[in-house]
Length: 310
Image (cartoon, rainbow, N blue to C red):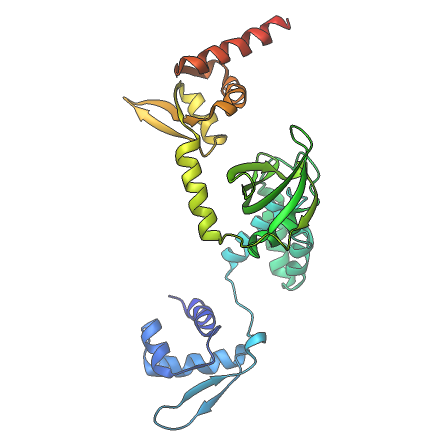
């Protein structure tokens, strides 16, 4: 490990400590006593505030824990951070108040002119393209806080019909331009996936108690996934169909190679038949449904409806 990397790791190691002894650094980083003493001097120069405690069981007592020193990154790590921030700029809506462009600007201002030029050159020639959000979402921060605080929320949900729901949300995720949540409805005792752009008038329900822990919600999700998608399906793919699947798939399905031929296998629920059909049609001639017959019939009806338009 390079010296700069070791010092950086030592800062992380000491971050949550109130005191430490020299032998801890020696053991943790496999260094000599002389190197450990020299590292402590350099850590002090970097901003690590401490005082020594004399005596047989003495050591070093850290000060100002809340303001503990910045972490230092090498050139490649800095480039990776800026590239990640650029990639995330497509997410114009996030659960956080600060936009990624502003964070990138603040970090950029702390760098030397030479490093700024290196980063500018990188961002000018390396690009990341993803699907921008397809709808405005104004409630991601409330949703995220409700997840972390393990709270039940009341919402007005409008995707299929106007309904009022109470949900305890387990996770927030972004897929193909849409923010989703996975959540448990304590009134119906059912699990579901909901689009955030159809959630309105979100309010925390302070009287809905007791709520579930995140671990309990995860167990409910696992149970749901193992029982809800109860209709197995199997579709053969061409090589290009395999590429399409790897670009766009869902948790209820996976890729399986059978005699060197790629297949989509998985399960769906009866209520998902229409959406499954729409998804499979998007593969065009690069997919062949082998089972079940119900899915084949729905697929053919969808193709006939498309042909009838012409």
